[in-house]
Amino acid sequence: MCGLTHGGLEQLSRRISDKGEIGCHFNSEDVQRLLASSTGVLVRCAIQFLGIERPDASKSVSDKYIALYPET
Image (cartoon, rainbow, N blue to C red):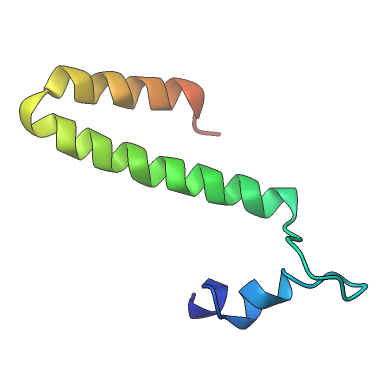
């Protein structure tokens, strides 16, 4: 995982295209996976945080997440 951070080889290789051009060269699948995983982490944190004082809000967040991202 360290290779995917700012100075890691995997991260740096995405900054250089096949033609040697420097820029952002992320494929759409990687961006989609990152957004899905970060959304999942945020929702899990929100559910735990809200569950302490507001179980109704916690359930609402959980229900909305399941509606938006049903299991396949």
